[in-house]
Length: 283
Image 1 (spheres, rainbow, N blue to C red):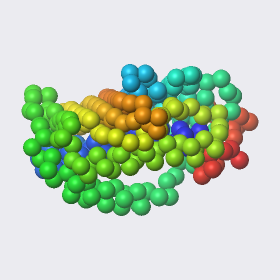
Image 2: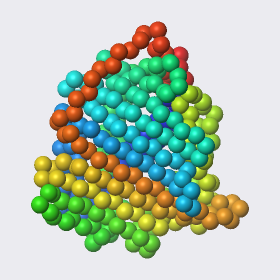
Image 3: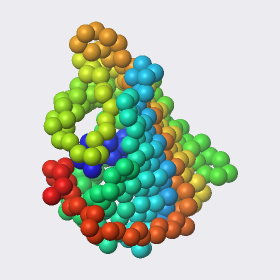
Image 4: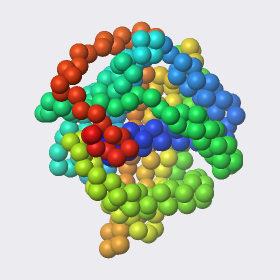
């Protein structure tokens, strides 16, 4: 697994994180959601179903479906993922046990091993706090767009913005990130591994606009986030003047809260190859 796969996982996490803090303008909805996320993250075990889809002018550039099971008490986890771009498909499995992650890909016998410890966790938490404070300031004017609907099963929180409802600050930041994402993709092309699979994202150059942002989160009566959907639509033109409409969809479902069982797998030592995550290559 190289930087590209890590980038896909990181992008998914960033979108989820961003969708959480986009709701910060509404105190009641924001605090409800933050509380539910904390409660969900404190689960002893859980199963997460995640799907991700990226389209350009109705052509699918990339799709990903993942099933993530974790048991924090036993310190074991498993992730099965299927990915596809315009040219090929790929399946991989990850297992966390004995203080390490083990990664396998369909069609190969090598089992990649990497350390499960995160030496930057404290710094990441500090960055998350700073990001929350920054987004709080940027989204104050979204207060009226947040809705919280009560039902017998819990609450549904929704942020639905289109066109001029989207703050200029969000549009400017998104445009900058999209223009530089192609540069980042070009740098990552220099790294290669058995897990190489990515979309060919059009290089938007001008007239970049965030057309739509929609976030829906379902929180049950036990204060658990059961479902979350994110949709973003961005339009723009490349250097040749061709118009593009990028549509991103993500769905997250949490089930078997505190009831998920994860069984350790047998690892054949002679097939294990240590993975140097910092460089994206095995040692």
